[in-house]
Amino acid sequence: MFDTDETVPVPEPSPIRYYQQKLQSNFQDTFKVTTEGWAADKQLLVDIYTELYITAGRDVHVNTQHEVLQIDKVWKPSDTETQIQPRDIFKHPSGQDIPIRTVLTNGIAGIGKTFLVRKFVLDWAEERTNQDVHLIFPFTFRALNSLQGKEFGLAELIHFCIPETKDIPVEALNYIFTALHRFKLLFVFDGLDENRLHLDFDVNNIPSVEVTKSTEIEVLLRGLISGKLLRSARLWITTRPAAEQCELTLGGVNLGCQSSPPSFLEVLWD
Image (cartoon, rainbow, N blue to C red; front, side, top):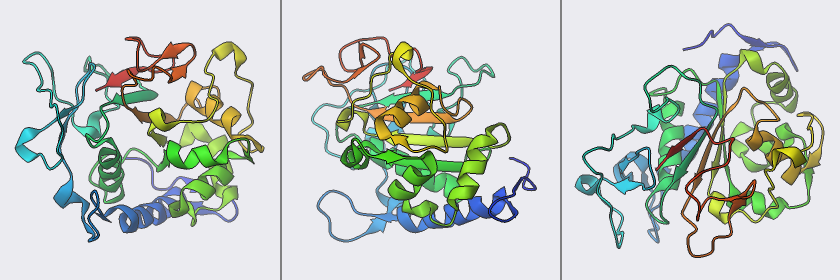
């Protein structure tokens, strides 16, 4: 847990807990019910959520005891693999108390990575898990693709892409970003395999970015994901193997065809 007395002084003094509760309430409205596939009727997310086997390795596994997705080929975990609960993805695989900034979750299309993200956010919003995190900002690359070449400050981008943040003023977000050592933030980027933006993560070519200044979205995301911007924030990225296209490249490393992720990825959960 965190200090609920932490205060954001602009545009008027408000405890961080106030903004967190607003965001949690809005996320509950968004993620508590959902649709699956072509179904028209909305259902509770907890009723259709598929528990996944998340392991440190190369594959995401469906728990066949609770399977509701039809997957042509399901990989079963080996005896040496340890299942990771979604709430623990930012805990180091060694079990040691080692801070983790960036996590990549890799799994085949249709296995349930997006539902995993929604369940993670809902659990946080309903105060079941990860209550050490002040604010969560879940993005999808599908939405970000439409903004290619446009300029945003980070707060403006959050408001544009995540309507649930509407109750947190831009001034408050900018203060939170510039006083980052006091606040724990989690940025989620779902569907990296769908990315159509030019995201070159060669650390030698990533310019410095001011979080409150408008800049091209590609530069903003490169700074955030690489750690040159908001170094203390946590990032969770989901993707799928791109073995057929072999076109998803970060910093000269192809996530679909290579066994080693870029240097800024500290933990790979599959």
